[in-house]
Image (cartoon, rainbow, N blue to C red):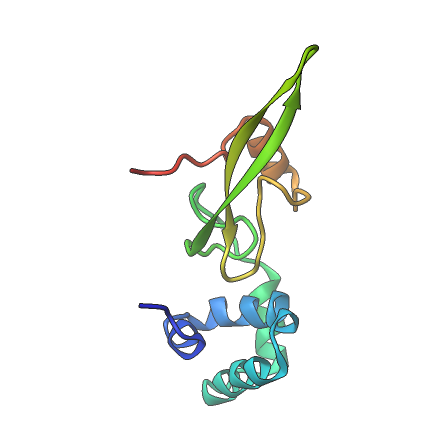
Length: 130
């Protein structure tokens, strides 16, 4: 069963909703943007609250998103062509994109030196659990 936007928004914390509205609201169609704004109004979150909630998230665990601290991800599979001298082969690359702020630490520009170091050390190359 698919999760609706209303259910997804209701299951968010206020901090997650603030990050969602700041980074992802413009990606949606106008009707969906209206649903997001009505959920923000229902929780009495103002623009000032959104700025305060998204300013600094503090300490983040490695398995969580480095931008917003959420643990809600979606799996993304990409294929990459690796060329050799006489041909080539495809490699499947698995990465995870945050459902709240749309940040993918494996692909997007690092947001600070800690993320850059962890990316260099390969700590954002998440393995798919079976």
